[in-house]
Image (tube, rainbow, N blue to C red; front, side):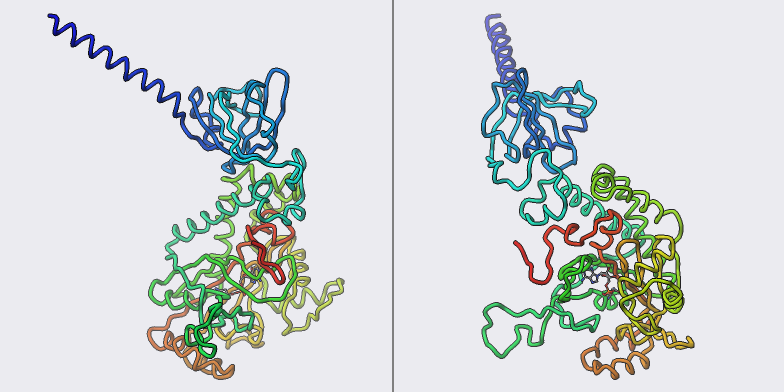
Length: 480
Ligand code: 4AD
């Protein structure tokens, strides 16, 4: 009996100890949540810990209020604390760790708030020197000067979340539609576009002055197209989405030296309409996805940066995109009363001013321009041999506010025609492997490339391409 009593006493004290330890443990180790998870309210009543950067500090007699943001959502988490927890180091921009209980908020502005028991300043921020000021809405041009800090602003953090979501949507479009994702190389020995806008690469400390590292001149890729063409010859539908490089000495608002391109290649296609369908579908799918999944972030742009742009985007999605031929485009330009800086005769390249006019002519809706003069297009473009004017089966997609968003073409799959063209431009030896693709099971095929930053400009209404990429590279600028 004594033994049984001792056993009961022992087990009760053990379970009490376990309970106390558990209580202690749960007090000591609150759940670590991201701000977006805390705001979702799923952990109401729980002891939690969040970490982030202070977006505002309001010290009142009864309470100290902080807004803390960790980049996981546009909305910050409101922290309510006793004035006793105030600390002179708690300033706008400082990094903090806060522990407390997640409560339902009395205010409509936020569903929940964190009643803080403990606030720890992890990283101080001298708000006098910090380039962003509390409660001020800085414009994109201003924040661009601080590429190492601009992720802390509402506008740029919204942009980067949208960019990330658009990237996922693009991958999901291609996955759902049977395309294989290919990692095309960044280092290449070819100049796909033949425009000579290449960055040549060499080791910074060459072992021997007169030998190329790769034994041939090597460059940063201007396009993954040729590598995609290789693999469309075994997988039929392939795509890539990666950085591309152009040594264009341009200071324009729509050119970068490093930009991201979405490129697709489709085998067994004989019509440019098969390509325009994919271009239009990628645009719609991605835009609808972004508008639905990033509504608050998109509103930062559509309400504050480019007010009214939401209507323009919805108008773009309402109807099928227009299609005109290059010859029709030239007629439209020549009939217009606008004076253009660049010539508009048949055979001329369409310039931004022409592209913008054509988009306006089509009611500020996206428009495909097809069948460009053969001489304007690179060696790979398919010759429209039956056309009265000598054209290529090439297409550009022009969109409001930007001009050219996509460029694509059917590729010349006929060995004799391709060989003749390569001989004409003196590239038959360089591209003997490309000719092989036409010798061993050649099929009609085509593809296109879409500039990802230009896509973001188009849907957000932002004016300068440097504001839609984390670290812009352009001539005379390579910050960070
Ligand atoms: O028209 P582009 O030069 O086409 C190609 O490179 C093809 N090889 C693609 C293919 O068929 N796979 O470039 C495609 C798109 C342009 O329409 C434009 O949106 C974007 O890439 N682009 C640029 N974006 C930012 N900065 C630049 N310097 C750009 N150059 C082209």
